[in-house]
Image 1 (cartoon, rainbow over the protein chains, first blue to last red):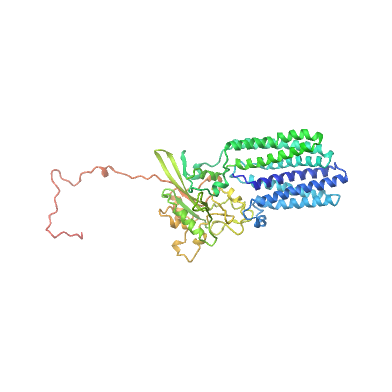
Image 2 (cartoon, rainbow over the protein chains, first blue to last red):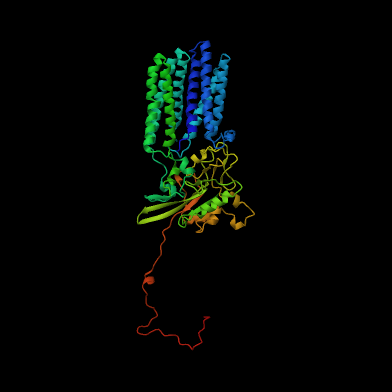
Length: 311
Length: 242
């Protein structure tokens, strides 16, 4: 598939925002922070989460050919995961908005509001991931691992960001638990992402040129795809990059998302170093952009069987 | 329930692209608006087509066959592109089974094209909506067109009559008979999409030559040593009427 940067930014920004919110809600439940700090931190950090989600939403509009009709896209929630995402995203944003507002105004108990936002947050995680996992023709995506990876990678980056924010706002009580949780989720996500790489490496394509044409002969060579220039089919479903670049991106994200932030977190958390924690989040986020790019590029669409020779 | 479909005879298709050009002509002139053409007369021309003819070589030289393969939306009976559409712009008409896109509702998210294993949908870069074969829905239902011509434009254009059109749910229709008698099959059956369009396979063309065709055999009525008699008749008495 051709990686779509709009969707890459949407999923990574929202993922980090969702992970961050889950960390905030856990903090509120645990009651680690005292009243004034609690209010200030939860307000600021949930505002950051809201801003990231807003940026993600903005990015998603660039994916649409007709963004002015985007309001229509909530209609088919009964069947379409994309429609469900379109519903879950504003609910999550509204939850964040009210959650931030409640803490700004110092309203005490926001557990119920937080819990509703957590539900919207998980609904968003699942529907975003299911958009990809439910396309059975893209075998690289059609796996429960896709959902697990979106969830864990979002939590990992969100927790790294939470660690950075806690250090930045001088919430030293929070730096260590957030840092530990970030390490834990980064390791967990590393395991499941590696599992999906192993799975994809062993995939056998379900369709072949033989089944695509219905001709049972071992040797079929395409001589012409019916046009000389490109078409939507040659643009949308091919990344057009070399296998070597794909390999490089894979190793880049495997380094940037997992070992590099782990090392930086290990160094930065004990001293609550802002620079190291910022580098940890930046490395992980850039790594996630590469991860999502690779996620798209690696998927092979069966329609590509019909487009093998230009002439 | 009616399910309109095309049945394409690969044994007959000569790869002339008449169906491609007639499809483009009809659908670019319709009420839905023109099908985009980008750089039509310059380098890298491209545009939207609902129908393409591709060419494949099957076998190892010298035992090869060239297969021309027309490809358009297959109007699946269980179309995977329809439920994924977030706006409901993609739909399957219950009355005749045609899968259509409502261009006024489409937001151009391209999700349906990911969900079609055949690559049958093409995004229109000018209108910014998804487009696809309509089975000439604006032609086959147009009562101002004479009845025999109420067929998709590709079917009418095909000079080899390789494209048949009809209701595959009616066992007596031409298409159902063709599928049943000539081994009609569906593309990528492994996905369970149940495409309505069927393809008729290549057939071995055999000329049966009997030995008598090559070596002249004697007239069984011949009597040895005697030349056949010419029927003696008076001049001018030939009766050409008998």
